[in-house]
Amino acid sequence: MSTIRNFVMAAATFALAAALPAIAASSIVPAQPAAFELVNLRMTVDSCAFNPSTVRVRAAMNILTVTQQLNACLLPGAPQTVDVRLGSLASGDYRVEVYANPDGEAAGTPVETLSFSVREPAEIAVFPPPPRPLTDYSGLWWNPLESGWGLALHQNALRSLFGAWFVYGAGGEPEWYTLQGGQWTDSTTWSGVIYRTTGPFFAGPGYDPRLVLVQAAGTATLDFRIRDGEDGSARFTYTIGGATTTKVIERMRF
Image 1 (tube, helix red, strand yellow):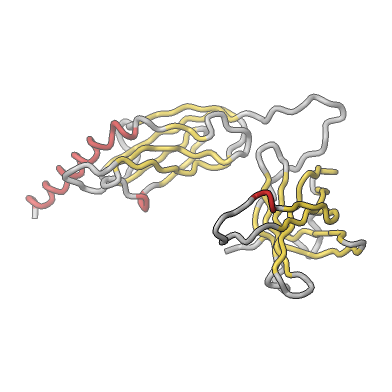
Image 2 (cartoon, rainbow, N blue to C red):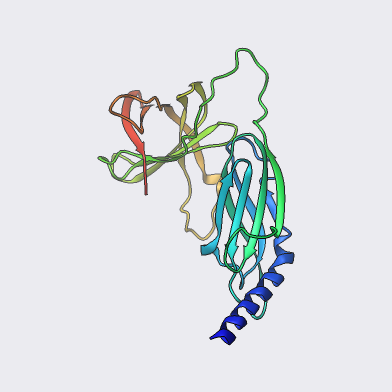
């Protein structure tokens, strides 16, 4: 048994040594993240030694520790580029310490250390300052009692919001709308334009983008205020064809 154990430990040590030059090429993506923008650690790893299921990220103060437990490989695998999520971080200065030990622990000297800064996004200096949201409302929103339609929202680091609204038309056919070009009227309310998009068959022999037609179809307002009895819900009010409707929606959890 001791012979087998020694062989495994020797193989793991070999895999670690083979992986070190690749790990040294890691970088922060994006290179200059804005506050609460998703930040990843991009690593070039040995595809044999690297075991994604063992990767862990821990945070203490401004230090982010990334650990991994390497597979035992006699020969190095092909290089592979992977992203490891560090999180959406507040503005400040951070340090990443990367460990690649056979036991997956943050022991000894890190194989790599990276430093980076997260800054508040640049904004035009106006007075009074324009309203901005205090949190991120990105996600897939729906009404559980009306399965079959929903609203996908994405809010970027500059706090702009874009929505893709998928519904069924009067004849039961699927229709797509987008919400864009809007603005925050206060910290929990966004208003913008609804656009209807039509185009050629996506699986046809050749997709011609000149056939895509985008038309303004109405207006929309998203109200994320927290109300008694509606915790986690929002109100989606839209006006299309002169008719105004309000739906209570919630972020889908899955």
